[in-house]
Amino acid sequence: MASWFETAGVLESVRLFMREHTPQAYIVGGYLRDQLLGRESKDIDLLVSEEALSLGRQLADHLGGSFVPLDEERGVARIILQAEGERYLVDLSQMRGCLEADLARRDFTINALAMNLFDPEAHLIDPHGGQRDLKEGVVRAVSKEVFQDDPLRLLRGVRLAGELGFRVESRTQRWMRHHAPLVITVSPERLRDELCKILALEGSATSLRHLQGTGILSAALPELQEIEHPLDTLESLESILPALREWPFFPRLLSHLAQPTAGDRSRLILLKLTTLLHHLGQADKHPPSKALNTSSLGEMLRRLRFATLEVRLGQSISLGNPLAWRLTFKTPLDLYRFFRETKGAGVEALLLSLADRLATLEGDMSSPEWQGHLTSTRVILSCYFGEEKTRIFPPTLLTGNDLQRQFHLEPGPLIGHLLEAVREAQVEGKVTSQEEALQLVEEILLRERADQSTR
Image (tube, rainbow, N blue to C red):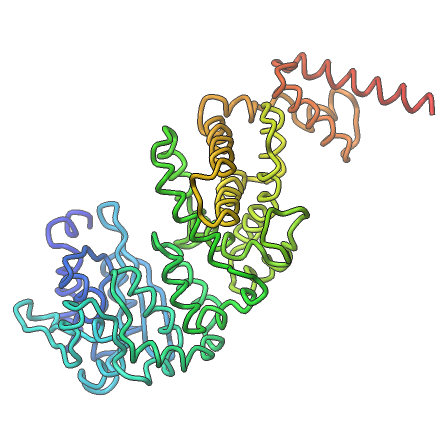
């Protein structure tokens, strides 16, 4: 199969199959748009005259891919292919009426394009001026009704503009503003995915400001109405990340943030979303003096069907932000306790604290306060990503089973207390072997028994 993809290409493989199974098939939408812009695309959208779900299953079996029914009611299927280490998506939708009528129901002119799949030399079908708008850098709705047909297009239009560096045409903006309340009818999963695609953009704050100006953002995330200046901290975060490129461990930081959380989402996307919403339940947008109401953040993440792991990570980032603000004396034990308390979100909490402080300083990177915080964060992250990491996170010398067997202890909180005492002693360099660890546990147990006998 791999040699087939290598020699003929995914599109040609699809073309050969379709020629035998359907009389009409067109390449439509984003693939053609990206080809005209000279952008690489691994997503192929096809419009077919046959029943798309049945055809999609056959195509997936033929190419050895995975079949996903995206919309059974409208007849939309997706085939996920892995070829030569790359991931390709082939979406099939069933033609509704004639080709021209189907294109008229598309979202934006730059996506209302088609080409006969069976004739690579055929001319481009462009009834709504998509090529013109591509040249002018404009996102223009095909009609006012496109947002009523699918309100998710309200977000998609802004995301496309941000992704391509285009502007949203003025009349389209008016239609968006008018239809903004319809966002609440979009399923949580689709809303989550489109928001995350926007957050994946390098300048996502600019796109979100556009959504905020049309009322779409507050309709999609009503929780933002509780927050004053919700986008300031996100803008600060996006301005900080390029400024960190000079740090020697920056590639390792990027790799950490690129780690997947669920689906196509990453730690960076979740950090951005948490940054946007981290003030939930907090009246003052200045340095936190009390723990955040993370239950509000958790409820929002659950409402949008984020995975349990992502909910916990988002909450840990928020709770870690005030801890990062207060992290001044940086002994290895201080750092160990910080990363322990932040439960796997310490790196993100430090970056959020940088962005939060810069936002309170109105973006003044020359401020001594900001420079001091930046230097402190660099030292901490240098330890985390460098050789000092084994000092902050020492290897396990004892397990709970070891303690139960050696000291005849019952399972319970005491086990956790003793293990934590050993780890802290390791961080401080007081314990370096299992023998020393067992000796420390014995000393602690003797002290506690002596204390109990004198009470």
